[in-house]
Image (cartoon, one colour):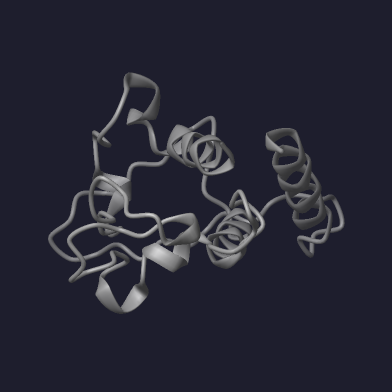
Amino acid sequence: MIRFSIIVLFILSSAFFFISGSEKGQLTPYPFKQPVAFPKMPVSADNPVTEEGALLGRYLFYDTILSKDKTISCASCHKQEFAFSDSPQQFSKGIDDQLQKRNTPPLFNLAWYNFFSGTEEQKQLKNRFFFRCVIIQK
């Protein structure tokens, strides 16, 4: 099942890369607006944010294809109206409405986070997505 998800991600990202609107297949840098009273947005040199990547991320965030039984998406728990959390619930509900050990943490200003709860591997945002996919697929 994990292999299927990786294949789907590869196909989707390849499709976005080739239909990016550029004849050379170049990706479009994402135009961040600099928030007042915030430091400059940290951007990884080996993984820059692009418009195509942001679009793919938004699509996958609301798609149920990555869940074990294809019934929930990231947005099922990270609700926009609650700062991308599942407030006011004490414990989040997963697949088959199983209660989890904690509630869903909010998602905002993640580019400035230095640490994400969990193991060393999960501390980087780019690794966080793949860790969640593995957990959801099991």
